[in-house]
Image 1 (spheres, helix red, strand yellow):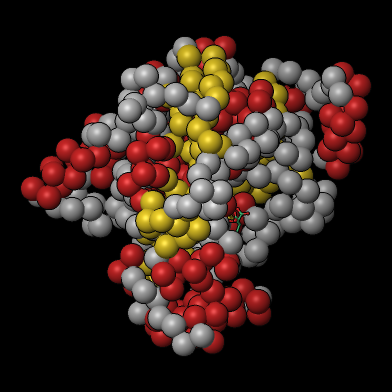
Image 2 (spheres, rainbow, N blue to C red):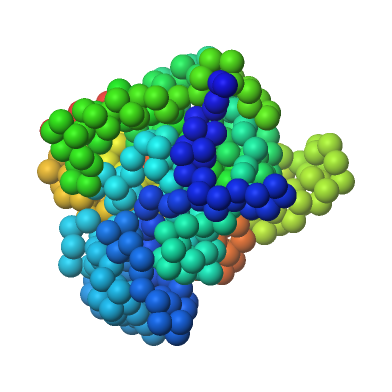
Length: 472
Ligand SMILES: CC(C)[C@H](C(=O)O)[C@@H](O)C(=O)O
Ligand code: SF4
């Protein structure tokens, strides 16, 4: 029978199923960070259990890590979480990429980068943006802390089978329009819960044309559309990205793996439970104006008038968001002045993102009215960027060049907005207080963020004259 990619991975991992009950599935990889693991390890300790497969369990530190003076953690809760993770990994024999390690970084940046993420794997982490790894054709999703403990103890997980949703991208992206604009556009059109209960598979020529980094940006934000996970079928690009990375099979074993991975596609004639279409060819740079990733608009548009929304609920939500964001309906997006620019996160903290931002920043100066920081997603991204001289471009332009971590994506470390500050951010969430109490977040692509840093307000990056620097 013809199967979707999701069904193939699912069927390969079901260990036990009973009518009317969740299935038990096997988990190939568990990633761990300091925020959602302490109680899980403690639970194991209390019940006298071990981590069943330390060889399939990998930990890093990201949320609480200061990106300036990283070894000096002054916040007691952050310090405790970091120290507890170190101790737990030591006690339970789990490999930890700690602050001394070049591979330390945001879990969804460093995992794929070292080759832990493979097509066809089931991957979990106590973190909602685990969906990022779906860019490789892995079934990857976030789980709660009690499930983290369960997977640690058994390497299995109880799961109800999700429904399948094809997000079919028709047409191609115009020059200068990025994967971030694409996913913001999709969520803007279909809303933040259109994919609830589904695993998305992104298909279409425009998706095939994306690099692995760009595919990760798209899959990363699947969760902001409500999806359980996001998938992109693996192809030559996936295999080439993985070849030679530390945790992928090497030599002949790699070629054998590729033979298996190549089968991970949705068969002709396979049925999705639902299909939506999105036309990429009309897309222009996006910027969010509200307090959910679905409240987005074209850079050429105006802050919306709440009365223009169709339903009472939407009108109320828009009114509340516009008030929180300190905006006036009818203001052109390009007139919104920003106080802060954050380039980083598991959405847009990879090398290509930094190249795109540097291409815009090169030869310009950050506006004196704001602070702009660039935070590589991992230690390795940082080193690569420095090899290519991107750090110098940023520093000369007046950006701060930081160490790897979640940073200002969420206010769990010293990088926080002050109340009322407006931020152009390349992250994935613009909820109230996300970047600091009463902070105001506008989600954009790295190029748009860099352009806003130079001009002091949002600009249409298509008007910018820049050349993307090729890898050195
Ligand atoms: C802290 C963590 C549990 C959380 C998540 O699950 O996503 C964080 O990474 C986020 O982005 O909000
Ligand atoms: S970078 Fe942001 S979204 Fe990603 S894991 Fe860290 S806090 Fe979550």
